[in-house]
Each structure stands twice: as C-alpha cells, then as structure tokens.
Image (cartoon, rainbow, N blue to C red; front, top):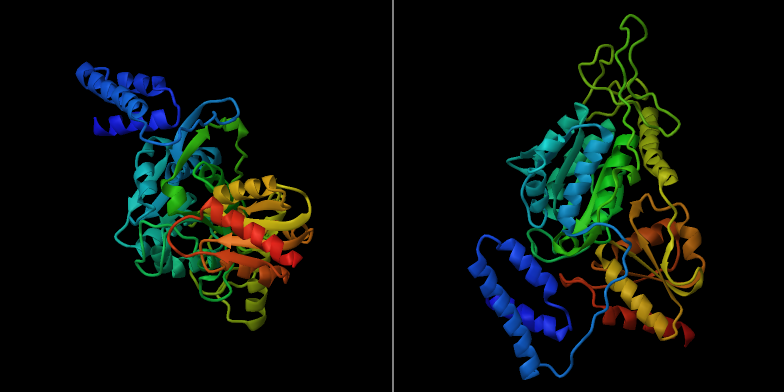
Length: 456
C-alpha cells in the first residue's frame, strides 16, 4: 500500500483522476476484495494528503496526448521486438528460429519469444554466443526465419559467424540491444556506441544492412522491416536498439495484419539432375541469389566460409573472382536503398539554419528540444534516421539544404564519422558518453549555441 499512497500524491501533483486506477485495482483483485479496498484507500489517502499538506509549491496539469483512434497498449521496446518478430513469422509463412544467449538488456526478448510457440516460434537458449548465432545460421540454411540476439560484448563474439552469413548470403537478423561501455561496461545503462561495430566490425570487406529503432513502439515496425529486408534480399541485417528503448515504454497502437507490408519468400525448386550443374549464385536484377535448401533434389552445392566462385559457388582463390564477389556483396547491400522510403523532415522547414540528424533512442529528446528552440524563434529542423547502412538515397540532397548540420549521439561521434566519410560534408557532433539519455535542455542549448556561433 505504500506505493499506492505515493501514487496518490503523484496523481494530486499532476491533477489526474483516480478513476482509471481504481477500476484497474478492482479488476485486478476482484477475487480479493479486502486487498482491493486497502489499495484503493491508500491511493485516495495519498491524494488527500497531497492536497491537505501542500507538499509542493506548484501543481501541474498534463493535457491528454493527441493520438489516432484505435486499440492501444503500453509496450516496452523488447516487448515490441517480440511481437514484431512474431508478426514477420506469420506474414512470411515461415517458422522462426531464435538462437540466443541471455545478456542484459536483451534477455527479455528470449523470454518473450519462448511464450510464442503457438505461432511457429522456436527458441534455443544456447551455451554461448557462438552457438547461438551458428545455430541460427543453420536454421537459415533450412529455410527458416533465423534470428539471433545479444548486446555489444555478445555481438563481438558473434562476429565471425556474422561474416559467414554474409559470404553465404543467407537471411539472418541480428539484434543488438546496446548498453554502455566496452567489455562488461555498465550493463544496466544505455549508450549508442555499437554503431561502427554494426557497420564495420567484421573481417574483410563484409557489408551489412543496419537499421535502428527510435522508440519502444517503433521496435515493432523496425524489426519487422529488418526481417523483410533479410528474407527478400538474402542478406544479414542488424537491428539496433538500446537499454533506454528496451526497458522504456510508450503507447502502441495494435496494427491490422492487412496494414503490414507483405514479405515475399522464394525458395528454389527441385530440378532435373541430368542437365547442367546447379548454379546457386546466379542472381536477379537486385543481385539476390536463390534460397536453396540443402538436400533439395538438383540443388546440390558447396557451402562454407571459403570464397565462392561467381554463379557456381565452388571454392575459388582466383584474384579477379574475389574482386568481383567483393563488389557484388557491397553493391547488393547498396541496392537495398532503392527499396527504402526517402528520409523526411520530422519537425521544421525544408531548408534553414540548422539541421539536426539523429538516430536511435535520441529521437524524443531531440524532437522536444527542436520544438522548444523553434518556439524561441530559431530555424532548427529535425531528421531522424532508421536506415544507416545503406543510407536513404536522398539524405545528401536533404543535408545540403541547410547551413549547418549537427548530429547528437550518445557516443563519441560514430554517425558523424559515417556521414563525413560518405558525403564529405562539414557536419558537427554533439556527444556525451555518460550511460544516460540526453536532457531536452542541454540539447536545446546546444542547438541555439550552434546557430548563434555561425552568426558571429
């Protein structure tokens, strides 16, 4: 009852009605009326106490949020990821295999998917990170939606196997729920410091599609899209979340299955073995190779991590072939950009003084800071990226419409490095590595300082 008493004080402080919580308590403890009555009494007494003692010098009023009509639930980032994966499983018509090793702050995804067996979801808690990812690659060989999950230190251990999925050109979704620090670091704190690891952290020239969720509810859409890209383009895809998103919560509107984009899966069919030998790396116009399930009649081919000969898939040490296959894998990743939506302005004008580019969990604080700076008369615009590798095809054109580009990140400037390398633009960074999210106030001040400094 102590918590209910404090909750009552908070309801008084923010001028909120007790009715919804009283109804919840009555429903929750319907079979235990004495417990319900005690909690309701504590809640009401807390409200009365706050009103009678005037503990705070001010009282606040928060207007109801403007949201689209529909059925909503409160959802965390990890919960939304679970539901998004399950939706992709059903929409693709495949079974899903999820190989994982428990690690903070990603373990909730394993726990949640373990309860989804009735939706053709199969979970495997492996003995280590390498077993987790390689079992998922085996599932991809077998024609399943294959997913593995970890946080930064675990992703480091999965690196060689992710390279294997890349050279094999198999669909694999890798979830990285980022946390703070190298090594064990600060497991319960948040950070965005695994971006360069996601884009570059493998041996050789090993391109990877990378997408990042912006909020707890957005995890549903982003992981669903990650599955769609992996299955339709036959590539590994890394999905980035972080501890702030994973454990944070927000209202999420239940989508209709009809509103979800279709996921097209095409397996190569059995063929006559009397003709020409099977060529597993003959590609379509998007450089996508066929999904050939080992053991299918007529689809016999070599597998493994050695370089493939173009089209035949045989082992090759030929220099020109290696050059060609390296270029194909990179171009295949780049062609994914043609299937992505263009980046759009979130808040602000189509041109102006300052463009603020963010990614991941900085979305909310950046948006509010931009709104407040604009209220003070400053020309500030927000763009937020979901697609980081490859970038949206119109990103360069958008950036060139603004006098200055600022990139706030909870790292030492990793997206900043990627954008400078790719577009050769003089973007600037605003960076903190403290294990906590940005405050709106510090971001607003940073935006204003950048605009004012350009005037002097």
